[in-house]
Image (cartoon, rainbow, N blue to C red; front, side, top):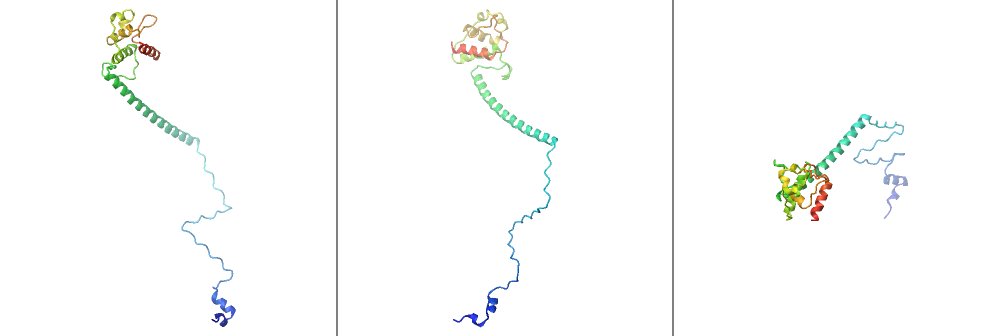
Length: 198
């Protein structure tokens, strides 16, 4: 098949096959995406001024707010721990009451935060021994050997006398029971040891 170029001059054929381009035409610009392009930074522009430092008053306010948050969190934790302890203590108190070991103060109150006197501790201990099947009984003659026997309350006299007879309570060097004094942890430890080694 004869070439179509033989009917045209070379320059004419190039004009037909190549698109017309203007001399020194700039290249087409790339298409921009939907996002806004970042503006070009001016190299001669002045840098942004630094943020001002907080004043001493503002620092004090922020510190106080931080401390308040820490105190609130700590108070919430302590409240949760106290509630858990109260629940555990309430279960123990209920069990002791059901066994007749504790009877309250006579006004329908247990008073868990009150100090424990020696005669109260002796009364509860004697009841606990009875609940465990350990016989413990005494009489007024067991109390007579102590100079302050008359100070023992009526509700505790039988229990104190029983512990004296068993040698669990021996009084102090001056021959006193000290029924109204508070029971110390050391004294309770000694008494419990004597009960366990009967």
